[in-house]
Length: 113
Length: 115
Image 1 (cartoon, rainbow over the protein chains, first blue to last red):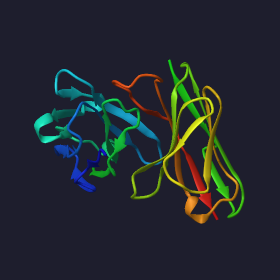
Image 2 (cartoon, rainbow over the protein chains, first blue to last red):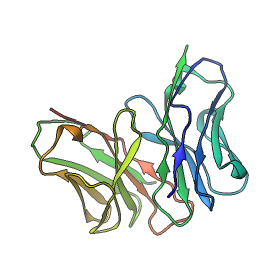
Image 3 (cartoon, chains in turn yellow, blue):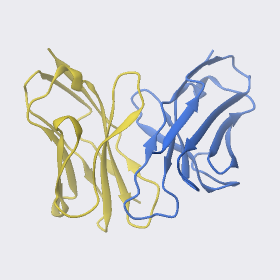
């Protein structure tokens, strides 16, 4: 069965710092990859997704993620975070042929102004 | 465009009372529908999913049930709530009959507090 690991459970940064959140998955076949963001008290919103093509994916609000197949990774990055990026971030993986994604446990990001 | 609506947004219920959370999707046909629960610090737990009317798959045995009486309607129910049922419940949908490049979109969630 597919598993998804988000190594950083809590991240605290100051504004303008760079961000990288790790995401690794276990299944080695065809995968679709997602990052979702959940702002305090709100639902999950899609941040970006990778299906095929360029492994460097750009999403909303200046976020990007890179799919490295050899490392089974899909890390999320942002060069300069803002206070408004304070949220919970979830990585999700959809294995080929499935319509049920596997979610990581989430990373809580706090950005101090 | 497609939209998903979920209600009620907030619910406080006594132990042993029934529960009904409703979710509807607009702008698409025959979607895959999902119910997730999110407890603090425990990530997302898939409770039920459905690929069509009357077709419900349960991922976690518990005192909750789900029904899909119409194509774009998904209901989460309980006959008797437990304290442990408290949490944030999220309905979600994805395009039906599409197994490649399928994206899940979430509703706004329902906060349930069992007292």
